[in-house]
Every structure is written in structure tokens, then in C-alpha cells.
Length: 485
Picture 1 (cartoon, rainbow, N blue to C red):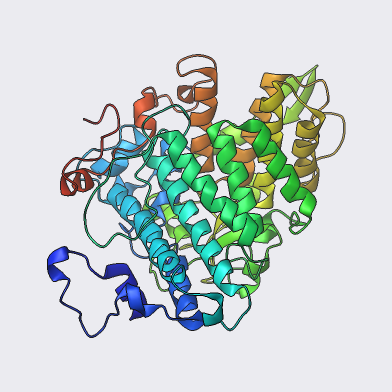
Picture 2 (cartoon, one colour):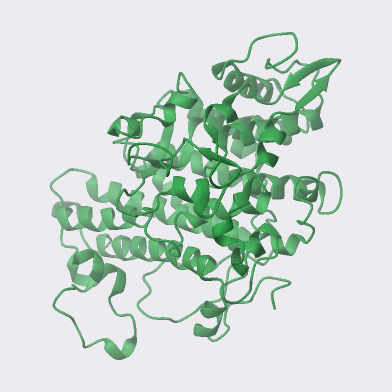
């Protein structure tokens, strides 16, 4: 009841005097530690999967459709919205899933704002656990940063720190439909970094993979700094996080995503933060990836199975990671991933991986190299350390470590392909890498997204339009993204 009140109170000013019996006003609902913990749980629940059209898991799958690493399903072969993603031409109107993503993330942001505002009115004396008030505020700010970051990646020009097309940053509770102008990309990142700094300073120590902590806040900040193009700062934070030694690479790549029949799945030593799937959702994220929305494509298998030649040495991008978590999908075409549950597997336990330590190694590798415009020792070691943990050997041809003679552009390609092999079907990272790499060379020159996805030729369409319904409801205060007017 409390959570319903937090999510829905004061929806319209004209209903201010109406207080249904099943809800509580957010301003008075949080009175101490028990109610604050309950409200915090309500924020976390926003990342759990509900039904199709609610933004989750679509927010993670849509980028893979945009990259071509996931193919469309015959279930959606006539769905204009899905066709738009596949053709890299997202719909402007009638896009229910895009709208679901947008509203879901802002719901998480708003829940965070209500909790933060409520706790700022209380004191430490209102809490039984010393320091817990500040920890909960830090957790809520970290979760707000996640929501804003995910929104910026899909609805803002996240790759260009000088762009005016950021997002509508919300730092106070919204009790009505009043709109406000969007921030620049730089200001959007600043708000995200401010929240993550609070998470780093006051966030809790790890208390389970399904809760954020100060180390996750540091890792997400390193990732956001990489996206922004602040490479030296990203490398420094990523190196710090690895050196902390709080998390470790899993001893076996495929087994870390198993078993789906036990809660042991949630004990993965690599997970900085993950959200558990919902066995009551009907269609888990794995079912979306195996048939409902699409299956992992042959394009992906071909890409990660490729190799690079360095001084006559043939080096495979992947040493079997991709195929170790993929199975042929005879029913729906393509492949299904065993990272999650699906029609074809047993068990109901699954996790949505927001950040694993493996990605931090790859953030360090790319950021360190880009910061110095060269293959630094730090960058090469980070990439090779991850490959060795995944079974690579030294010297020779095949799945081996990269030599010191690797060129700068070759190295960046190697990092991008390493991420494709390591992180496929996890928050759509492969698509955002394509966009970032394209922008780093200057759209239309050097590496281009269309080298991987031929239909992706218009950079304006690399991000979604602000939902038409939101623009209309807000009186068009928000400016639409280019090419969608």
C-alpha cells in the first residue's frame, strides 16, 4: 500500500483532496527506518520485469535488435515498432514499448526522489541502525543515477558531451504532469556523477548482488565517464575498483550464469549489481531473447567467431564464450541464450546483469588506451587479464593473449569484440559501443555503425525519439530529438 502511494500520489492537482484508503501520502508515509527500507525496496522493484510493454526487459533487448546481433521473431514480423528497431528507424508515434521504457525509468527516478526528499526531513535519531539514513539516501541516489543513465543512453545524444540533447533530469518529486526543458548532455552527466559520488562516499558495503553498493557506484561512474569521453578519469576509477579486490572474475564463464534452479545463481562473485528476474512475469527475459522478441542472430556468431592478424599471428576474438551460453533454436530460428531461463530450459531463477567485473576490465582497457591515444601497458594488461581468466593462452595462433606489437586501432577493435563476446544479451552494451566508436572517429568517417549494421546510416536515429505522448502531455516544453520532428 505504501509503495502504491509513493508511486501514484497526487497524480493531478485537482485530486489533491482525494486520499483513497489504500494509499498513504508520500510526504508523511516515511517516518523512520522500517518505512524507509520498504520505500527503498519499492525503487528496486522498478527494475524487476513485468509484462510486455512495461519497459523491462525491452530496455535491454531493443539495443541488440538495433545492432543486428539479435534478430526479429516471427511473432513480431508485422509489428511496426519492432520493424523500426531492426531497420534502425524507430517510430515516432504508436511506439508503446519505447514509451514503456521511458515511463518505467522515470518512475524509478521519481520513486527515488520521493524517498530522498522524505529522508532529508528526518534525522539520524529516527533510525535504529547508526548511519543507515545516509546509506539509504546514497542507495536511492545511486538508483536514480541508473535510471537517468539508462534514459540518456536511449533518448539523449549520450556520446556527445557538447550536445544540447540531454534528458529531462528530475531531482525533486513529481506529483503532476508539469514538464520542464531537457538538460544538455554535459548537465545530464553532471547530475548522474553527483548522485554516483554520493553513492561512492556514503553507499553501503556489498550486502548481496541485488542491492547497489559503493563499489557499484564507482563502476557505473567509470562507465559513464567512458561514455562521456573523459577517458583518464574513467581509467583511474576502473583501476581503483579492480584494485579494491572486493569482486573477482568467475572461475568459469558459462557456469556463472547457472543454475536457474537455485538461488545460488545470485552468488556470482563478478556481480556488482543485478536485478533478479520475476518467475511470475509469465515471459522472462530469456523468453524474449529466445523467441518472443527475437533470438541471438547468426550475425553475432559470425562476428565473435572472427579473428585479427597481428604480425602474421592469427588471434581469435573469442575462445568459445559465445557458444558456451548459446544453443540452436530450432523452433524460432537463431540461437537462445542460457544466461537466462527460457522456453527451452529448466528453472525460474534468472538475473538481469547491470554491471559485472568483467566489464570493468574492459572499461579500463579502452579508457586507458584512448586517454593516451596508444596501447598503454595498463590497457593491454587489462584486456589480456580478462582473456586469460576466460582461458586464453600465451603465444601462437588461436585464442591467445594479444602481443605488445598490437596497433592502436587494432587494440580498440579487439576491446570492442571482447565486449561483444563477453557481454552479449546484457543491457545492450554491444549497440552503445558501436555508436560510441562511430562518434569517436566522427560520424561518417573511420569506423561506422553501418560497417556492422548496414541499415544504420542516420546518426540521429541511433537514439529514440522522446515519446510523442510525453511531449503532448507536457505542452511541448521538451524539445524533440533531431530527425523526429
